[in-house]
Length: 463
Image (cartoon, rainbow, N blue to C red; front, side):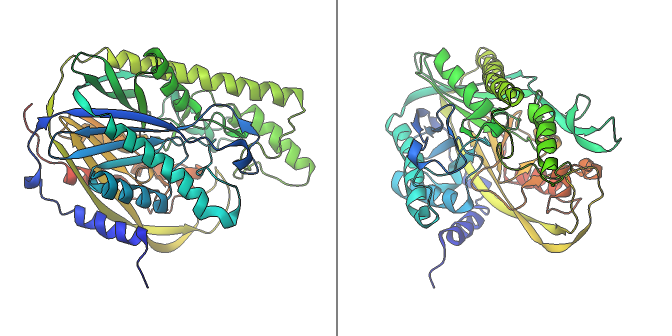
């Protein structure tokens, strides 16, 4: 029996984990190219629950090269890319374009409003559907490589307050529930890696921020959500001559600060389901806008406000990125490029009771959970990666302990682990669904991610 692509890729990732720091290439002259390709499904190919398109979705790619090796930063407007899709796309980029798999950062934006395919919505057509979708992702990288030009890179930071910790105590029940916890751990930082031509014209922006892309979720319309709007805003601000690709930070407990689905829309849906004899008051809400009466004027108003909020928050995040681009003037034109990956495992658990929040979880032991980690160093910037959804405290700890002052963490990267959410150690005491349903036992995930990534980082060099 032939091994699967995923199995082959796993073996390759494991081999890459033993890459010696001594093998880090010397700096060379930086070249950069960028492109974006529309991956919005045609109307007739939308999955059944989708009613149309709110805004177009894209695969955005940035390719960097220093004469001896190259790397690709690729972000796709989907909730995540499956391990099979990520493995196939990574392997094709490596074989056809010569970019080493260890130097590829391929991630979803986490939007809950985009299908992960682009072809006919029939179960028996899945291979065809994936092929169309994967072709478009590959095309974005190929076009970016074809546009390579001499460049410089610079790094800047700013802050954005559109996210908030979502672990809160409900005032009515005094139990754990989702809601804005203004005193909770939150990462407001916006970290921006900008590439410009030798005459100073922007080529591409790779920006990092931690927020759930869930505002448009109930609309059942294709959308890049908050970060899709932010990327478009940045690109439009430069007359669409720049590609702005998101790096989704450690956002496992970071909701948009104004999230209507947690309040009015959720209450309406709970009442509607109760009339049908079904109690969903402490259950995962049905996907999309299922069960909501769109002819109800209140529902229609709230949904329209959600559309406005996507643009408002996207513009605010976009402005924070633009501010960061005006910051650090230090530029590098000779850079080293280093990539490495490895896997770590944590003890697993399986939950045996139910309840979205506010109840104690009950568990039995389960098989270990694998987490795939990676680092890509470009110049003096370290882009860490994990194929899961870690909490903000984990990202903050990594950035604090990293020897690279310019460190960002890209999540949902290079496939998606069954771990899903990885809470920090302190958050395991919180009875919130993302903690209750995490298959990772307490006491492992935070340190496994932080220490694992730190072990992959090569020694600092002067620039």
